[in-house]
Image (cartoon, rainbow, N blue to C red; front, side):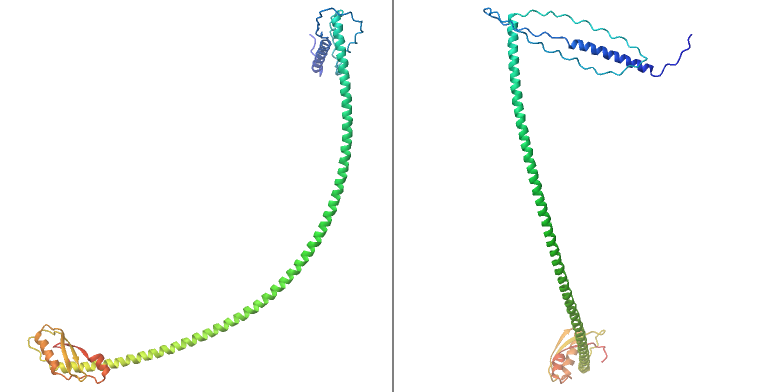
Length: 349
């Protein structure tokens, strides 16, 4: 056995590339042959009632040139290690026998030629019209460009004028703004000075007002003190008067009580108590007196429960007149004109 050697690097890739190149070359050959095949044009036949006169022999128009074969791009050179196989030879092109032209074919070809000439003239006229139109478009485009250029220059001129006007306007506005600011500054200074002046005047007025209020408060305090002093004096006078009146009333009441006690004692000294009196019953009488002490009437207001004792008290009242009464008319009228009396048999004098 031969020892197995290591494969050379890149051998598989170069072999695959060679196969691909051969396949592409074979495809281009097949496509080029099939592309150059001439397709037979349709045959048009005109029917004639009478045979036309034999036409003069006209030279056939030259056949159109065959299209050039498509340019095949240059393929990369194969790797030297791979041997190229010769490409298969293309099959021979079949021979096409050209039939002899008939009168109808000649007439048809003449018509086709005339149509081609007319079409060529029409195309030439269209090209001329198109060239004129393009020339007019160029002129119009040039004029439009010139107008645009003039308009652009005019626009730049206007923009420059507007810029200058705007700068002038800005300068004027800046001057006006500075003047307005200076005016506002002076007005602000004047306003502040006026405010300071008014504040000073207000401060002085406030000081004067506070001083006046202080004086008024002091005067009010003095008046209050005087009023309190006067009220105290009045109160003291009223208290003294009240005490004097109370003392007078106490003295008068004492006098009244003394006169009543004297009247009560005088009447009780004349009461003859019946022996059947039980306990210490109370008999109430209302006695109407005259200024001299005479009894005008004696009315029982509350019975003691013992008629004999009630009658004994009534007899004693009538027997004790004239009763002792004060000589002062006012005291008598207020306290002794209608005199309530209470009698109990066992009360001490």
